[in-house]
Image (cartoon, rainbow, N blue to C red; front, side, top):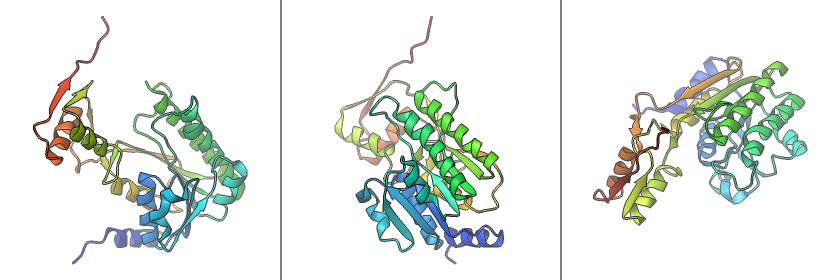
Length: 268
């Protein structure tokens, strides 16, 4: 017997009366978004996927239920038209680095506010938002503080009768990720890998698992305002930076590549 998780998920959606017909996926041309779009398409769900750069979503254009739309989601009027008629909206928009001062706030905080306004205006009653593990207003980085600002905007939606779910995944890995592949490129090109905090630990989560969680949570009967933080419990071991570097060296056939460790500076 062949194990088909997509078929099982489809049965769950139908049995629980959570079946939806159309979803607008904002930020869907990115790494996680492509996997979510594929899984939604597997269920026969219509996906509306706006992007400013259509070529980035060329892998999705061929899917029969995915409609890739060239649009600027930062424009409120355009955003309102995009979410109209959808059963749910998924927000995946995010950046890791600022090109200009204030980019974190524009993408992670202001855009979620615009999405909530558009959902309220068009009567969309289901909103899913992917944030980041460690998001907090007092977090040490502007990235995580801006993510917390976005979560605050999503929570406001509940007062308007919109059922929301916020996801806080750990570092996401997969075949086309920008995480393990970066390490692999460094291992291939540098004689020594320099790590500032080699024993810092983290637990990455597989992209298909995150996508599966988002898709299964998209139903209409989801609980109100739920925050889900997850890493790959039981699947991926908790790793240090040094062990990750060593693993990438082995995978790249460069197991002899050395690592230089800089001790973490402590006050006093």
